[in-house]
Image (cartoon, rainbow, N blue to C red):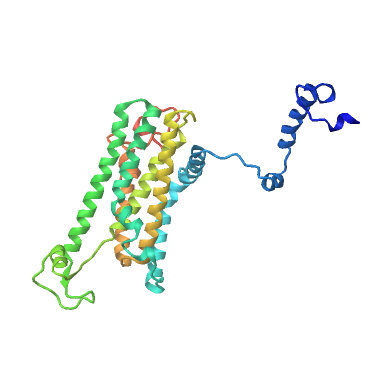
Length: 314
């Protein structure tokens, strides 16, 4: 009876000697492993924390499952057209109350949409280079695929210049936003604004054009992820995963701001023309020209990786 109250010590003898302490040390972890969820919460137990890379991979897994599907590439153009028409009808029949996003100086518009093409190029350039070189190992083919960015830049420049000229040649300078009192002495938009006037012309929606073109281009280029397989511990895996997350979030921003443009800005016909030019730029390249042999080509998606342009599949 006296031995029950003795303090256990590894140096002690008898029932509380080394063997008894060893048994207690084995039982204690076993009991800790058997704790219920409530015991962990109430008893202060901690769940294992996820690393930053694990969170990044979960985001990339979700975005790959969302944006890389062939159905997304097939139906996103139609979804953008439907959203543009629905938003425009809502703007005309039952305008939504003004909010932060209806202000042209909101953060997303100033720091993202205004430089949408720069964001798109800066993220697509390393993404195309890394994924295409990983699949092919051919620097020449990578440079050929990177020329899609030059083609896209040319489309962006030509369309924006065209929109600006159309607004210039169809516009006049007015004394007030109510379009009262034409100022004949001001023959350009810049001069009109500099003198405190208000220029009004046929202003094709550059936002509708650029956001449509950028979103569709990103989705097309991300189709290569069907073929990309990397080791989790490799630096290439980290780089591609980071770019996938960045491009995915950028695509969601472009689509969201496209909806805001449809609901809050421009007339219906201006948005129709803007969206039409965005779709034309996308389909003229990825839907037609890039299928030809004398083009930058589509992202490699053939498991055999013969990489002949006539074997690229949409």
